[in-house]
Image (cartoon, rainbow, N blue to C red; front, side):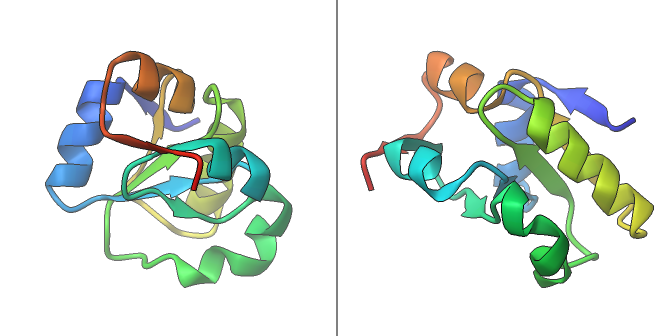
Length: 104
């Protein structure tokens, strides 16, 4: 299991240098995503996770928090240490009024 953090805590960690990794699919990401989120869809995650640096803190995000928790747990199994999950996902991030991009 990986630790859940609130959207506010996730934003604070990103502002402090953590990477925000969005594991939703491209269409979902295009509709709305947290500003600065890097897209690595869950469908490609096992092939692409090596693109993610091991020396940065990672904040995982999806729509509601379930897929990102799975991806985060997978990263932990691959030896990534500093991984947290954004509770409530992109929906919570947007609902909190945190910086996001629509329709890109």
